[in-house]
Image (tube, rainbow, N blue to C red; front, side):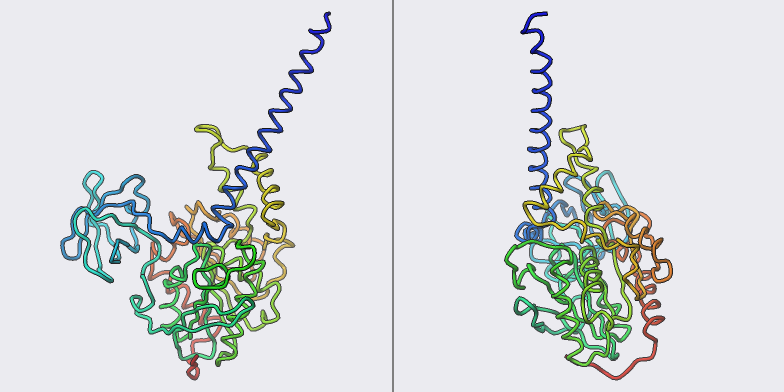
Length: 398
């Protein structure tokens, strides 16, 4: 055999190895950028607050509105209550009154501004109100002094000594929590809706990154201290998505954790690594070719190196979730494609003594309230009254 023939298998092997290294190094670097943009970078996430008008109004007639999607209809064809946003106005859609082709007619309630005219671009969202006043909540703007400075917050007075504190997710918006606030206020709980670092209007930390609880828990601790300093004897906590991770980190680390009476979570981020894996399983390297789990693992390691992601610390179910000793009410949609319901199911299986899990059929991420607001409010009210008591105590003021 000639020397040249003996060399070509080695060259082929070297070529294959070079391709594999390039694929994983280059692909891992690229998908670490995707992870940063979609989940870590505060600037990128604040940009998601800009409206994405993907629906078009066809006609408004009193309490009925006809809409067509400009692409995927999303929740447009799903029964429930959703916010509807357009330039200069806000409303709610509820009962589906009829469909014709791609046109969907729903019951319509104007919340603010003038009604949209035919052809107006709109956006459907799980948020239900544009501000506390629209939600029927008499609130005031307050400031929580925290570890990085001053954090804006909403405060709604109540009649109990126990306060409720509502923590939003990585949407970077307190508006997520407005579905909870009328429930807690109606039940008599003074309610605080704080911001945390990297929110619009709140201090930005030096990294500019979201840490899914590992830094933000200190901001929540400041909010709890604010409540205690202003008349609260103790608190109940409610968290959406990443807000659930912030609460779990607080319960692990804060000196004020014993002041928490109960926790309500909605689609909580309990294991960031598992959540990234679940989302990556629906990504494609090229059309029709799913992202290999091995490439996801490389991307996560690169993200740990580049952005300081502490994957092990972000598994709040580790060690059998033995570190928690307060009662939890957990809502999670079975159709959630952002945070897998499997993590909430695992929490309920690990700690059946303290966790009550409510599965919401066909609900997407943090959409349990939207599909059945009355049942959601009843479940929260009953849980909190069971844990805190139904008797209304003296008033509390900020």
